Length: 244
Length: 234
Image (cartoon, rainbow over all chains, first blue to last red; front, side, top):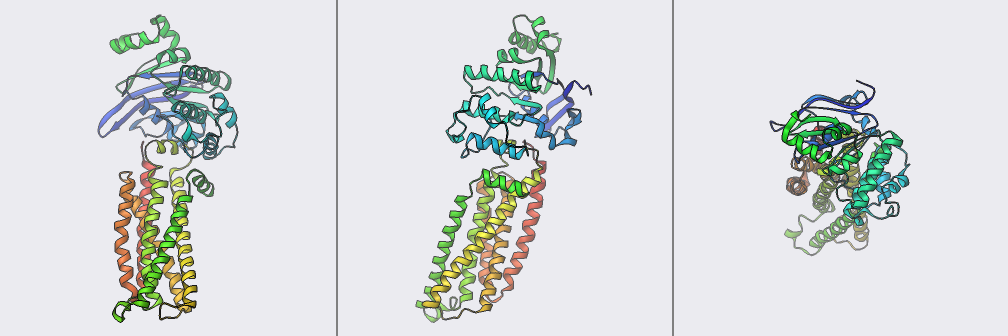
């Protein structure tokens, strides 16, 4: 495996009750980049992300993270992965700080970076509030804080900006770009807000009916469709793989 | 394992279960005095079943076992069923900890709590009751070393039976990740041993036999449950 590549999925297949939901899916994510994972509802984005987390076992195929087979290095590899899969949940009777401290304890890591993580997501003043008093947007921010507090190498973010106000969306975009630039994190982010993905991502992967139809760089997208990612995406959905 | 148990205690409030145990203890104390009152006020025929301290303790033990079986099942729903359902499971499985280790930590915590609280309840109510009996006896019997030894033996057996029933109930409820199924299973499963214990007042070995059966059933249930957790997909 190329040392420049952090995540490589080869020929992934996943079946549920005899139905193939992920069909011979290949994915390649370079280190220190943001991979925008796009697709319609039910295309298989969350399923692929869950397989990358080890929450689902592929029916066949291989996943390599950091050069090592995910199955062989599981569960210790999870120390290097931060994630938001579906809506994050917390222990509501605990404060934000206590939730992050608990997370670090489970990660078998010292209690560091809690204040910094809360600061980065704009929750530094709410650290001592019980999570039961948080709004949806605050919980989403706390979920992001939890995904980065242990300084992971890889972030898997499934629609992380859901529920955020416009200011929050901008803050998170800037945060993700900073994490990649300054901490050399690699981020795989799925979102339906194509304008945000366009401003962040280095590479786009489009999944349809359980198969990654296309992996292109954002510069290739702009060269092909100067009007932007949204038009590229719709054209790709209509024309299929022939849209090159 | 110790660290995992500490983490379980941090994330789940244990105080409601402490209160529940205290309430069970008070109710059982009430039952003890009720049975003693039957012995004191009842006719010869009525008082036959309640004529000795041991018989009264056997009846009370059956109720204690029933109550703590339900409590164990309720605790297992909080620590196991809820934690391995839906988004809770996503969070739990995102940690670099072996799934079986996390499950065993939860089971050890519930088992320890149930055992300690059942033994503490038995000790507390026997102490209070024994004290009042020594001052104003309601039952025409005497407290002996043999009686104390039998009560301790039966209390240990009840603890094992309660935990075993709790484990089997959560194993049943885990199929559908259902809190209601777990608790109803505990209620239904507890009825048979409770009746068996009461009927076996002449056969003290009945409690020991039941404890062995419960322990084996509980271990088998735990073994299957840990395999199910290990293979879980979410």
